[in-house]
Image (cartoon, rainbow, N blue to C red; front, side, top):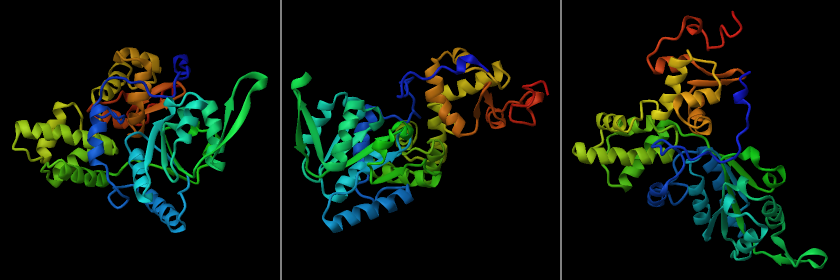
Length: 362
């Protein structure tokens, strides 16, 4: 075993890492642009067909009863539309929405202040709900189930609990790591949904819709080229669309074709499978310096010149999902697809297998 692979991550949030065009986390520009590009109702929302169908039933039934909708838990990778769906839930219910996040709620009093100011039927969107503090989490149990919280006044033996009744509200929780949610919290959600990565055809629809809103002329093959490099994530697709738009305006006639999209994304170092400089650096080091592995994570990070957490949390998830890299007890190994993607020939002992052959002298 490579012992440098056994140290656990110290934080459940992905490290910031370098600025990446294909990063799924939102930056300031994304936040501003997404507000204009977000669909306003479930009919406009592209993709996630099963989630949309189920959520539509939940909301229509709640409206028919004249009641607030059940609490909703949305899980999935960043950039797939969890925040957008929370806003659609509020719009479909004709209710205002309050937006906050788990890291912002570090004390039970923080949550009590938010809950006590909610209006009847209001939607409370709690992003990264798994990062909320434990005292606030325990207060949330009672608020979700009984629409009541106990506010502690005073300290020590003289402390008293004052019950505070809350108006009915809908909590929409979003998380990128559903496994970190404690069962008592997860069980209090009436509807849970997991957001899947988008198919290229769905991303093409997203890109065409966004291009129309941005007043960008794009041909179908241009949208297909961008979609194929977007890692199955609408946020990345919209970001790539904006960069290709810039290139088309400066270097061409403003129309996005397949050739223009390919040239533009080549300038930004995003290849045909959506890999960027960091991804290719990890694969290149693994193949050229270590013969495809196995190699420990810390050793690989040093070879790339990045922090261990950056390689593990920023680069590896997509490489594993694409079948280009595998994590094994002995370290990271490259798959045959990685050798093919970089147009390299694997060593003889790996040519017919997955990199495991020869680990034990066979």
